[in-house]
Length: 462
Ligand code: GDP
Image 1 (cartoon, rainbow, N blue to C red):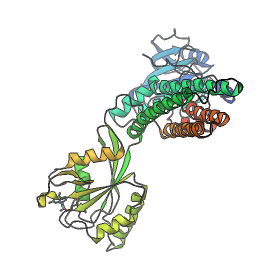
Image 2: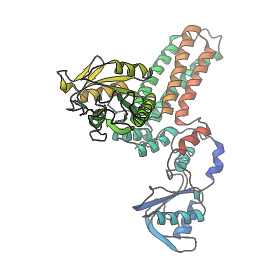
Image 3: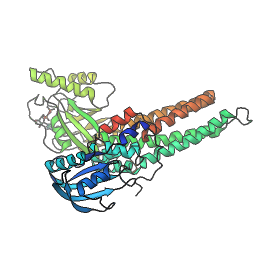
């Protein structure tokens, strides 16, 4: 497996070396009761801690069944001990795994004994952070661990695994390599201004720059799909009361989560349901029908509905096919945020002879019979920009997209500088900026602040 088989970033961030001198420990399995619970230990005191708890140091990477004892020699549990000497461990440090019985009290006792023997409790994500600081993983790979554990769909998990294998990092490294080559070329032109050949006038630089932008766009595309798989999309179903919004939510969710009645104004609370279409997670939000509410509760429902609409990625405007688009729908349309795409869904086609499907940007459905629902799912994917072939998709985060986008902008400016001004210095500067943006993804040059923020969102024991 190519798990960790890409080039390592150079060691940096000396500020962390102090923290690395400490030995950390945490329960790595989820809280609660289970057949097995694992306490993980990493750092310089690990061997000493193993000897205190187990009486001797287990052979490297050999599962040994042993009693776990506290500092006074009293048995606290018995289970499997595994010792991974550095550097061949997850964190790159000496690591001990104690697989005991998975009850909260037992785990607490094992953890307390480990702490008494010379460790401190790990912060969230600290094991992964150490793996990163010891160059076992780059930053994108470390993030992929958290994303793999948190994935909501199978496709998201596959994408995360691809990123963990280093596919995303390799794509970034390839871009960076090409950039470095191009910078070398441009900087040579700057260093030898008297050369007869004007490197910048030569089409080579322009050609390489174009090729680089195309490749960057390819990676960005794939990362964008990955980000949709990871973050999903929030969709608000809006429309007048009784248009069939709750029925549509139930259809999309394939369960009866929303109450459907003939009485207008039934939905007052905001209902949320997570669904997926071909692996793309969607959070569908059903809100109160948008009308001047008759009572205080409904008015509050409508107020909350508008708050959800403001925050939505996409709005489904459900039109009651029995009434058509009237002043009420026009009024709603006029108030929808201009930046948010709107899909108009014409519901209740079973009452007339309208055909199901999408025409001229309107999707004709019947929430009652299910007709047109496939067309609606397709329309949702299209508006989200999602194409359901997850091959080659890396699970990416917004942070990665932003970095790729700013690298793209720098390259666009570089091309502009090259064609309009032939200004070598400015060109070199833009290429440098693009490189800087890209290496932040894999963490070669990432601020300690950002690292802290990324790893603190991991859970304990990761
Ligand atoms: P909401 O107020 O917009 O959430 O609308 P509901 O989903 O509660 O539906 C209002 C009424 O319209 C209910 O009596 C539903 O059974 C009915 N309804 C919803 N969708 C359809 C449809 O496609 N065809 C028909 N004939 N009735 C529907």
